[in-house]
Length: 69
Image (cartoon, rainbow, N blue to C red; front, top):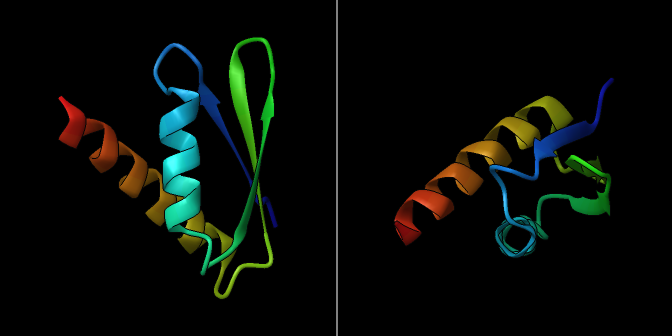
């Protein structure tokens, strides 16, 4: 199963990703790596299906960014 997510650096800020990752710490471990154009996120030790966790993480991150605007 694919347990990774690539986020475009032009859209997503590292600090927002870290904040969202901290909020999800009880659900999984999220490792963030820096690539030239993308933040590469790897989800491990998930309490439920990675697909579900990743989808909820994306929603949470989008809401977090929207709340700042």
